[in-house]
Length: 227
Image 1 (cartoon, rainbow, N blue to C red):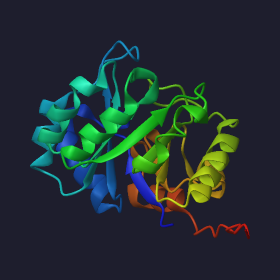
Image 2: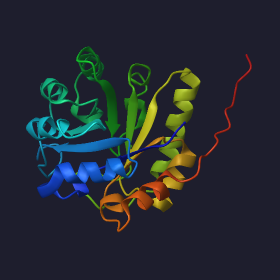
Image 3: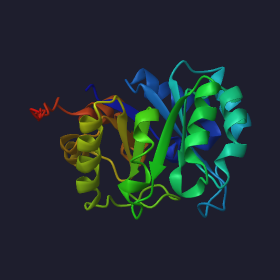
Image 4: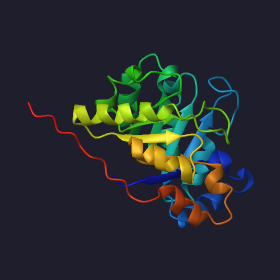
């Protein structure tokens, strides 16, 4: 699996967002991770669909929209219309997660399901086959610059095996405290899409920071069970 880097705009300079997006895209990032917070599901408020719509005109990058909001089903259409490529919602905020996945797909976007550190993988077991991506939060969402929670590595690894056993295609994204050091750990555990904020936007050399987080390719040994 090729590693994809998704700089989180939570750590960007909000006064110059278009330039910040261009800077990280030119430096090799494939995705732009857009942190949408509603002040209710998480304490802070960040940005909404109008900002995404404005940014869409300036960038060719994959817009990876992470909805940290209550009632995500009410927000899907406006972000799809604004130009999102991937829309990820939190399973903790969803009464009918399967229906939301269908809603996202019907609007022509890829669907992601996010889990907070304290949320069990069993919450997404029935959703993996229909999802394009599962996002394992490696910090509690809401603030940039938090420290990576090591105990999430086992969860990433379990998810990797779950996807493999289902013989389905599903990306594993990680978000929270990702830098050149923690990147190796999460990639070894099976993650292939890495969200990083301060480690990229705070770097003196952005291209080098992205290269360091991308790291060397890791080969996973697939276990094929003979029937």
